[in-house]
Length: 304
Image 1: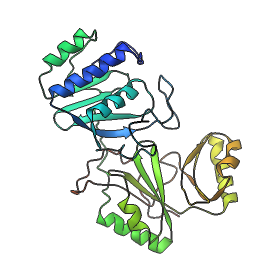
Image 2: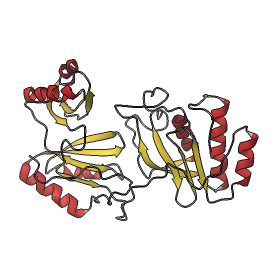
Image 3: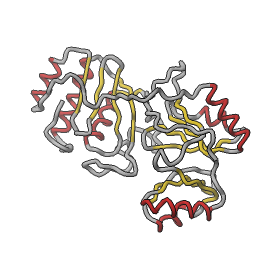
Image 4: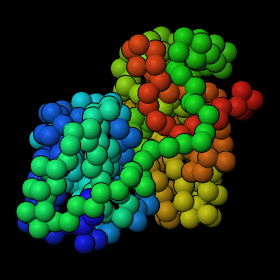
């Protein structure tokens, strides 16, 4: 369904789009949808409207975004508010799907695309009564597709490899990419591997990196070198052992980024700058890999 606006009016037109979404979903007998390929705004954003604090997810998910991940099931009311945030370009994006029955997403062109296995006549009549124009098309130009080979599953063989790497190299850094443009970080030691593994977000992409460095002078030099190209990414560990990540755009931000830090690691910004020791994606409990991560990062056993 196309709209004649490049951004939401935050008013009657927006409400008409939400009503269209509801009508198509209800005709398909849908009261819950799955989140697919969820994302939040990255460090560079080309949206038409400014992102808001919390990516438009405040009140829908906890501040740490627990429950916002690929495959999560949400009621239609939550899905509607997610769609509102996407129409407003507030920072979060995802597809809303029920396999074989229903799908909804906002394209990069800010058009709303709806598909249903149910006859659309009633929903289209309601949409047109609201003053919107519904255009029937064969398929959305923004359907997910990838020519890349399937990602590696984080199965028993993967975790055996993780255990072996930690045993041979000492503590390592695990990046848990739970949505596009957002990661959680864990420091793996032999006694913590299973506890960390048990708490990982479903369908996350896992990247294993060398450990943090306590040589903060070296880290500072690496950051300043990286900032010659105007952008750097660093993972610091504070005095309480909390790991975060930060993007820096200016050299004068280096001192603040390392204040109160006991260890840190400069991370690659582009995938061809460095390779993780191992990379995989969490399968579902039945062992099937359903997450749609593009395997753009390959592991390198020769990493030093």
